[in-house]
Length: 195
Image (cartoon, rainbow, N blue to C red; front, side):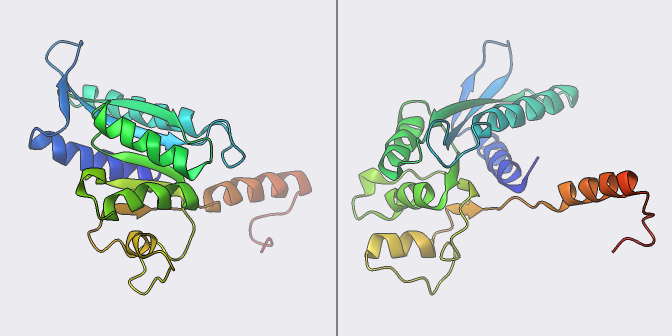
């Protein structure tokens, strides 16, 4: 499970501990924590599997929690960002307000910026007040206290002084190790001579 999922699930467990954003589950005595994922499923940005990854992460966490004897479970609600920032913002807002999501997983820099801007809008009614983690928000402006943008709300979202947004980028290092071993096996090169 990558860092985005770990951060979202960690934040959700803390929220469950204080009784925020939880609901009784149909599974008897378990308490469900609702998480939302606003990821591209039909646009040009995502590989089409981000939604599956969100559901898989929740399933794995639920299996681990059940094995540990915990009464906490996660309910992952996924919405298609369509890789359109305004759509991503609208759907993120819906997941929080209508579905009760207490944390969000977002995808690209543009979509993430649109959603995080809701938190820094002058109208407090637009604030989502939930932790957000982005899978592929690669813009170096995110989290930079020196980020500049002509739009003051976008600038505030990039700077994220209140610490609502986290981001992570996938590392290809594990896949690189596997591919290197496959290539070595195909070529007969030992690991001692390969560099």
